[in-house]
Structures are given as structure tokens and as C-alpha cells.
Length: 103
Image (cartoon, rainbow, N blue to C red; front, side):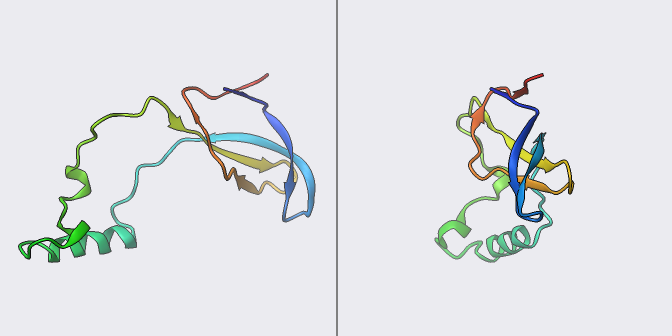
């Protein structure tokens, strides 16, 4: 999918439409040290050997096997204001095999 390099968008900080540069951000791997991950792991550990405890009876996320890989990835697109250098994230992302910018 082809996108323009710059676009005019509303900047809430400046309260007006300004020129924004479009940036494509690479997806980071999920951290296992976040608060939520630790809580989930702790609950999974507690639920061992006590019958069915719903989702905490499942194996660890790292042990799950992907049955089928998706053909495309969701594009993480951000808009950086040229004036204030603030970044805004696009709400409704889309799937695309390749995202390139028009020259």
C-alpha cells in the first residue's frame, strides 16, 4: 500500500491542522516483565494440580503453538507534527503486506 510522506492532520496540542510526517514503526516483542505478565504467570503457577481453573489451567503462553501464521501484519502508523514534534497514533490500523511511501 502506498502512502504519502506528509499529510495535514489535526494537532490537539496546537489546536489546529498542521503538516504531519508519516512514520512506520516496527512492532516490539511483548515484555515478560510487565505487571500484567507477572500477575498472569503467578496465577498460572498457583492453579497447578487443582483441576480446571479456566484460563489459568492452560500452559504458559510460550508453550502455545501457532496453528497458522497470518499472511500480513498490521501496520503501526504514527504521525509526527512538523511544528511541535508530537506523535499521534492512527486509531484504525490496517493489514498490508508492504507499506511504502510515495516520493
